[in-house]
Amino acid sequence: MEFILVTTQAQPHVALIQLNRPKELNALNLQLMGELRDALKALDEDDAVRVIIITGNERAFAAGADIKQMAGKTAIDMLNIDQFSTWDQIRKTKKPIIAAVSGFALGGGCELAMTCDMIVASETAQFGQPEIKIGVMPGAGGTQRLTKAIGKAKAMEMVLTGRFMSAAEAEKHGLINRVVPVELYLEEAFKLASEIAQMSPVAAKLAKEAVNRSFETNLDEGLYFERKNFYLCFASEDQTEGMNAFVEKRKPEFKGR
Ligand code: HXC
Image (cartoon, rainbow, N blue to C red; front, side, top):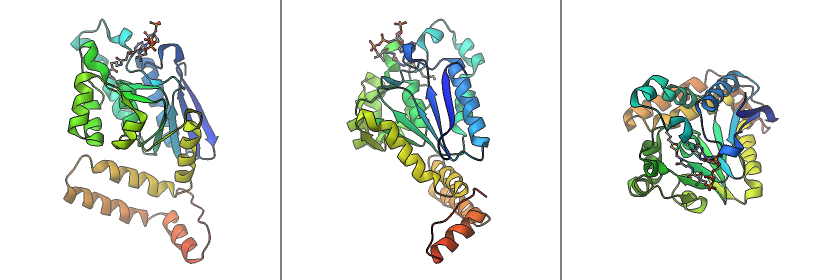
């Protein structure tokens, strides 16, 4: 891995992926995205990992797709490169992913943070879809996920003007989970990850899948889907352990089975 750093057990059951092209503000070139896809797949298959954090550095989570790599491309080049199949694979990660964001989260960087399940940000974080300023538009989910997160009016303004949104504003409009001082954002992400890592990993995967389904379907279908996953929880040892532990007034020990 050249452009990301992976720590499988950064804390018990919590893996950390750090985007690592600091000089280019973590611009997401094709190689970095491929490495990220491969790392997430491996962590998704690793039974010891229950939650994944993706972070950058203090100055930038990621300043977008690599403009220098895209600049000379034609539409057919882009079609043949098919970078979005990589993004689709990332989106299919079953374990919960937290983005720990400081500094710039722009274009593809903002889209990557929104592809994660939760966002913890530092006070210095800035979110934006500035693609319009370079003659294009969001391509990795920005027009869809941003609109669903903050509503049409705000999303339209950000996409059409390229204006950045501060962490405080992003929290106010429901784009992110919480904002903390810059020296604490990673710690805060780990706290959230550890809390989730103590839950049943089986239930966490099924619950993530059901929440995400709400974006893709109507209420009837969504409730049907939720019910199936709820029933499936009852096939797990974790359900027996969780409910027995409650009755016996002790802490459950979940095994992910
Ligand atoms: C390639 C980038 C880059 C990017 C920054 N750099 N963003 N390189 N692609 N997206 C590089 C700069 O060229 C520069 O390298 C170095 O990182 C530092 O950046 P500066 O511009 O010197 O820093 P600063 O003045 O602090 O400005 C920071 C910034 C600005 C506001 C974030 O860099 C910026 O506007 N970047 C582009 C943001 C953007 O438009 N993102 C959307 C991309 S399109 P050198 O070697 O020149 O010094 C996109 C589409 C996604 O994301 C859909 C498909 C996945």
